[in-house]
Amino acid sequence: MKVKFYADWEIFDRALGDDVYTLKQLIRLIPQSSGYILDWGGGEGKQCKSIIDNTKFSVINMDPSVESLKRNSNGVLAIQGIGQYLPFKDGLFDAIHISAALHHAWKELIPCLAEIYRVTKPRGVILLWEPLNSNPIAWLARKLFVPDGYDPNEKPLDNNMLLKAISLDFNITTVKYYYIFSYTLPFLVARLPLKSFWRKLALISCEIDRLLLKYFPFTQHFAAYVKIIAVRKT
Picture: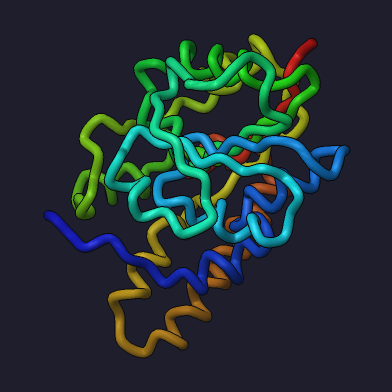
């Protein structure tokens, strides 16, 4: 069934807090106060726009889609490129941000990560936020509902394979998992009446997921998303 892609973003914001704004998190991990950051597969540049007025970093949004880049806001430096052949010189970036983009290039995972390594400075930081293939609710939702703008080539990633691939060239410092039962709730609540009521239940469900993932590590195997922070090996 084809559906329009929209969600109750307040649930994301309130349930995940600062974890929603992964690009802002990344900036805080960089020891210096200026330099270059790449938003890898940043689409319309929404995360870039959220920070460019409040940072001394030069932020570049790279995406393969010309149409998405055309919709970037004024002030966002947008460059077309593909992950396995990044149009940048070696060691340019102090940090690289990847939000729900790498799974679109899952067939080229190793070449993409090799290019990310190439253009990252020694001791540079990368932050990835990607969907995983181990959550049955997310799998069922993807099978039953096809949102507009869906990329038929995308594929949620295998967690172990992703961690192993990143570890080839980066030292992983943080791994955090998200969503067990609550993955689809922001999308469902957006379509229901009495939103304030359902929003409260959704936030309770998000909190239950957070506690399960924190105190019962085996539940991480069923997480729908993962955030990984890693430092480039010298």
